[in-house]
Amino acid sequence: MPGLRKKQTASHSHLKWAPDTELVGLEFELVLEKDAYLYPEYSKGLHAWFLHQVQQIDPQLSAYLHDEESEKAFTVSGLLDGEIVSSGRQVKLLSNTIYRWYVTGLSSRVIKWMDRWVKKLPVIVNLHDAALHVRACNIVHPPTTYEELLNSNHDRSIILQFITPTSFRRKGHHLPLPVPTNLFHSYLRRWNNFSGMAVDHNDFLAWIDDCVFINRCQITTTKVLAGKRGAVTGFTGAIELSLTQQAAKNPEYEQLFYALGKLAPYCGTGHKTTFGLGQTRLGWSSELVQDVPSVETVLTQRIEELAEIFKAQRKRTGGTRASEIASKWATILARREMGESVQEIADDLQMPYETVKTYVKLARRALKDGNG
Image (cartoon, rainbow, N blue to C red; front, top):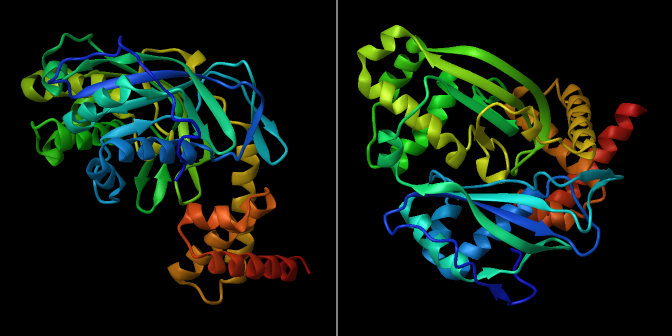
């Protein structure tokens, strides 16, 4: 897990919030002294660096946040705003360019850790071979509580902007559409886990299905790499949601509807929000949408191409296991073709080195046979 090359820290005395705060969002301005090259799925490095920061201050919280079964009480974005360009098999970060990085906390326990963290923030975020200097850190989503969200004023409609690819899991696949029930199921999961004011999700989502309609929607879809399981199909863009007249018959759910809309920028939308996906903002602005580096698109397309070849070769064996192996071979071989070492792939996929090495050989042999 990456650590700090320098033990320097910086004080940010303006980063303050009340002791009862349960939600806050931070924006980091990061700058490189010289150009740097990263693999397209660099967001996993930011995820690991952040968790290492947690571990240094609160090992028990770090263990909890590592738990695959726990709802994640934080989000971590990728690098936004600054130009990220394709450079062969890697992406290139430019010197003297401001990259913005966002971190949010969603529970009082995480916020208490963040309060200690910001008092002595590192001056450098180490991301593989890139040393990103922390030029500034500011509060971007105001400190608040779940109760304050519930009781705050609201507009007649909710406008959400999805600035990084956003997706939901459905029947073993990705659903890259901003369906209201999926949106609010995503927000309600966090609400029920961390607010202390849980509601019946089946009943509430049935109400969403009956009472929420889409005024306007402008989205596009793309494929990106995120987390440990390869490519994700996601959407970016914006949507405006309103309530039918019958919604007023249930004022508690109406109030929760608007509260969850305000929760969205803190918790993100959909899955893999700790790996940069689902970054969400309020309001309609196409200028915020992140451009996905073309090299990442090339890599995801190559994974899909190889997966189809390997699945076709395994049709005679059939079954889920054969499909999973084909996808794993495709992911590993594509990443080797892009220049990643066997050790880096093994570490990232949490697989034994020798297994990954064997899969590379088998995949290359299968590809040669298929082309032969």
